[in-house]
Image: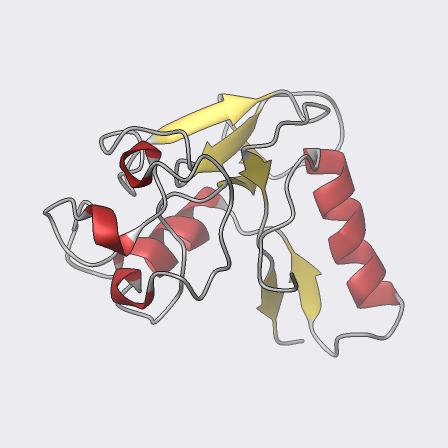
Length: 155
């Protein structure tokens, strides 16, 4: 289905997809992976909430371990889980690659430094799905629980 997040994508593949969108004329904007700060702002807004919808966990607002589905779902499944900016699926479903590396916070796209993952996945417990939690993986790692989202930046 078109609205189910793509998973089993390496960080390199996610970045290559962004470059393809940009260079193939499919987008008039700069297209890239979000930095973890862009990701967190989209997920959390301005009030330091723990989940996109507030501070209390609610299993009917996200696809995590408590949902019992054990697979990604369409991003339109949990309308009650929208962030303050109306962004869907910032908690659960698939963990999402961010542009920057985990240790040095650099957005340099060369090398094999571990990259940041945010948002938790369908196999995550509720505390791991909080918008403040950071995780990481090597950029060539693939997993059924890792996907990505893009950010389009006006030129």
